[in-house]
Length: 324
Image 1 (cartoon, rainbow, N blue to C red):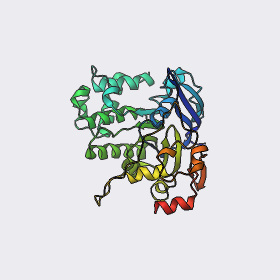
Image 2: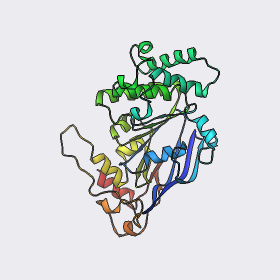
Image 3: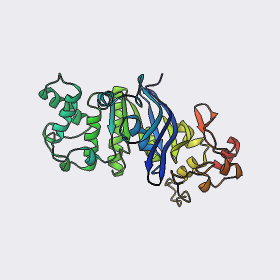
Image 4: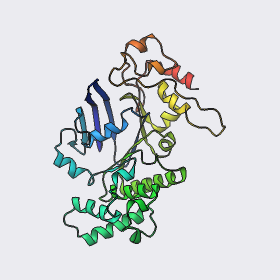
């Protein structure tokens, strides 16, 4: 049994215009020490799916299962989820300023988080642990900077503080939601190195939510490609980059900058409304290889190779010819 097993996760929100089907039948596994990247455009359901399995989408209609080390997170009560979040499941959000309280010192916030899950530890020992964590994630003069406020840190340093907080109790699973989006390339590389080093040291599993395929190439073992709330393709990293099948995956890769300076190739059109989804494949209106069946029947997520699945009616041989 994998550390995290998600099966047929569905999440919807009621609105005056109708139900928004944000996640539609998501399934994946994450093994201990493995990094799973979840990629896709904004609004594809990446963040909603991980927020749901940690109990952070109140008011949503949820079905499916998400077993973390034998506990179903979907049916777990709030007390169980509060115990797991922070202690066994660490979380890093996209904007550290929205996660760090601006009126409290960095060290105080880390100490309070540690003591919330470990009532035995003293404030002195928790503060010592906080300083060790800040040093571990590469913050210089940690024993001095532990008493600084969030606004006194740069964006990259604040993100490192969030990593330190997330790793404070050596969680088995780390969920990182767009952890490098607001950072420049140099700082981004430093943050990814910190995450990778901590993973190697503690054997932590990582679910990495991102739209940056460069980050995926550097960090991921397995990749889930999402579009319009559902999985388009799921495969090991090398297959996604070199033996991909789905036209949406190919479109994402074609939009990457190249060293040769060629013009970027954007994906034409816009994603469909999650309130009134099309009858067939959700990508049909934007797909350059669409044919009649795509508009009338939604393709299932089917095996096309070892640990490789794709939701597309396009034959594998035809897809390989297009990709080449």
